[in-house]
Image 1: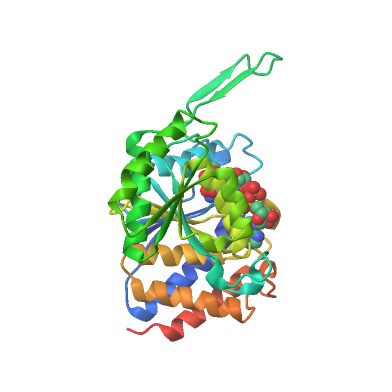
Image 2: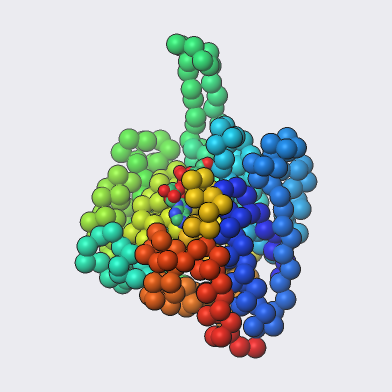
Length: 352
Ligand code: NAD
Ligand code: IPM
Ligand code: MN
């Protein structure tokens, strides 16, 4: 398999190096060939060349089996232009309409909620990834004056809402999960989110074995803290999904633990940890690489390398249980050492 690697900014290069070391260990042990091409697209590259992503960048990415990304975001690029072109650009141009963000607690001591066991925190969020408030429709009038007007429109299309809600129901059905919850703000956003209501009501009857439920997004934030065990599959729009998955990351031990896949089923897809570039941690070998390692496992699973992906997940679970990890999860290891330890566990468990 051929992977395009975009380490990006801040802690991105460190966590992707650790994750790729684990991928190398898993695939060497199984005998599967993997080639990686590293692309320099980042804040450094943009500041040095003025290029965020080359003109043929997205076309080039389609030649790979998958894209693996660290993080993008740098205080030296205050308008975040490079991240918009690279990260959001990939989501839009490769039409990666499913942002798949599982929330799984691996060890009860990592949950900030009291008395919650791993079985209580095990749900997935499907975040719509190609429209909503992220499309950049709008503009500023009289910018910088006391009369400034700033408009940013939310785009919801029938096709866009339908395909993500369909994906959530299909995922629930094929993985044996019995509850799908759609979260919107249709009580206030009575046009845009009425479309979400319509689509959800249209599709739910096609899945009689699945309990459909609607909650408003503000209540979802409340329920996720009060009792996350009531959720199996959550589907929501782009911005709400962004926010609620940071809350989800907290439930599983912090942003360092959370994985994601930006998918267009059947096409070149992109995998990245949920966290950002964490500038204060960069270059110190302290960032938790587990979110990146679990994202890499998700990528291998997506590409059909089931044994390798399973071994990577099991190795992460063991390391976490044994308190072998970075300080954010109560360990004493560095980023690199955590990656090496997990790679070692994988090496001994994968066979040809
Ligand atoms: P962040 O995710 O970088 O950090 C939020 C908090 O989580 C910080 O306290 C940080 O120290 C901690 N954290 C994050 N990753 C961690 C890890 N691997 N191990 C241990 N702790 C970790 O979010 P932010 O501070 O809001 O944003 C920083 C920059 O990252 C911004 O430029 C933002 O736009 C960008 N960003 C990028 C992505 C992405 O590339 N997908 C995601 C989120 C934020
Ligand atoms: C994420 C990030 C991005 C988003 C930012 C960096 C634009 O927060 O992937 O969760 O909002 O989608
Ligand atoms: Mn986010």
